[in-house]
Image (cartoon, rainbow over all chains, first blue to last red; front, side, top):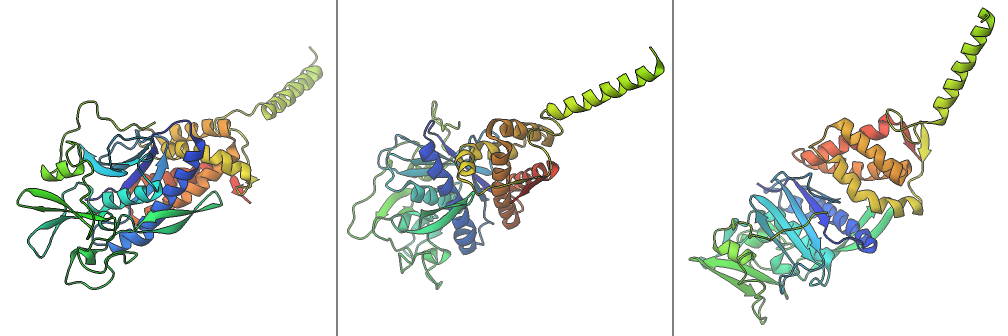
Length: 243
Length: 130
C-alpha cells in the first residue's frame, strides 16, 4: 500500500519568505507526481494528492504520509530522509544540508510513494536485492516544473527518478525520467544504491566515487531500518514537529 | 394611545429594526462581505495575503475530526481575519487542485472532502470571481 495523500509541513516558524517558496515546491511536487512519477509507476498506486499544511495534526491516519521541512534535522550528511513511525510514512527535508531543498523534497516524496514502508526490494542478476528507492540512483539529476499558485508562477527544481525499467533488465525504455542512467541498476554521478545480500546491507556508489556513509550507523537511519527488516520503534524523545 | 399613532410607531420600529439589521451584519448564516459579489483573485495583495493563509485553509478543509458546519465557522473566522476575498481565492485555487487530485485518485479521501468543502463555501456565500 502507498500513502493516499501526502502532507508537507514547514517546521520553521517566522520565515514568510521561506514559506512563500515552499508552497511552490509543494505544488511542483504534486504536478510531478500526477504527470510523471505515478504514470511511470502506474502498477504501484494512483497518485497521492500532495498539499501544504500549517499542521498535520488533523491528518493522523497512517495512510497519509507527512514530510516535515526543518532548518536542521541533525542527521550528518543527509539532506533528507524518509522512514516510518509506527505505520505512518514520514519524511524530512533538512534545509541546512540540502543544496536544493525543492529537489530534496521531490526526492523524498518520490521514495515515499515507491517504498513507503521500506520493505520493497528488487532482485539483481548477481543474486543481491536492491531497495526500491526511486530517487537515490539519480539523486543529482534534476529538471524544472512550472508551479502556479493564485496566478503567480515559479520554476521549481525537482528530482529525477528511476522507472520500472531500471529494476528490470528485460525491459526496454528509459531507466530514469531524465535518462540519467542507461542501464538497469546503473548509478548516475552523485547517486547510489542500497543493496542487500544475506542480511548484509551496503551502499553502492557511482563508479569512481566513495561510499555515501550518511547516517549508516545511526539507529534511526534508513539503512538500520532496512537491515532490521524495518519497523524500528520511534526512539524516546524523537519527534517531528508540526506547527 | 390612539390606534393611528400606535400603527405609525410600530411601523417606525419595524423600519428602525430593518435598518439596524443592515448595519450590523454578523458572521453566521451570512457573514462578512456576503452576497453575490465579484472577487478579483489576480491582485498582488491577494497573493501576498493568500500565501500566509494557504496552510491554515488547507488544514481547515481537510480536518475530518470536525463536521462541515464547524469547518464553515472556522473559514468564516479566517475570512474575518484575512479578508473574505483572500480566503475565497485560496478556496478556489486549492479547491480546484484538490478536485484534480481526487479525480486522479478517488481513494484520496482528504482531497475529496477538501474539494467539497471549498466548493460549498464559495457557493453558499454567493461568491463569484472576475
